[in-house]
Image 1 (cartoon, helix red, strand yellow):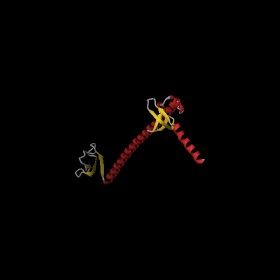
Image 2: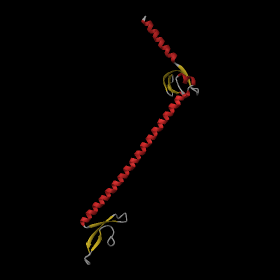
Image 3: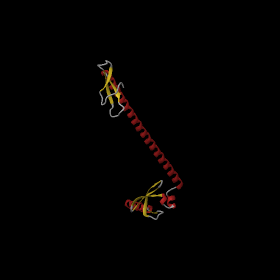
Image 4: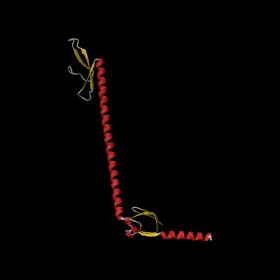
Amino acid sequence: MIPKLSKILILTVCLASVSLADDFKTVDGKEYKNAKVSRVEPDGIVITFSGGIVKLPFAELSPEVQKRYGFDPIAEEKRRAEQEALEDKQVEEQKAVAREQAEGEKNAEADLTQSREQSQAAEQRAAQIEALQKGLYLVKSSYPREGVRALRRHQDSATKRPAWCCTGQSQASGGE
């Protein structure tokens, strides 16, 4: 008796799966024979058929198929609008983050430039202090290639007055 009951049960299950198979035809005329609905999603259905697995958007299905699977065009339009608004918000947030990063990089670059300038100024002050201690005076040239020239103070032997002597590339003219 049990083997007979199990045969009936197996036969019922097999026939039920065949009876669940359906034919789907899209609006553009594409037909899917003996297709089984794997799952229903908010924007369409996923079916398996002899050619594989495919997702059919509700927009491509007839109104009666849409109704059978609970598709509501108004609710779908609302969901799509919310989705687009969320995507727009995410894009704006990403742009804001990018702007903040660019501004941070710009500020970091400005800070780096400022610290370089401060470092150079400190080096120049240290060089001037060292030169003063050695009796040299540093004068920044108006010509960029000459840079800083060292002027040494010495006494003119004829007049016994202080005079200036240039130790840089070019001679300095009187008391600069």
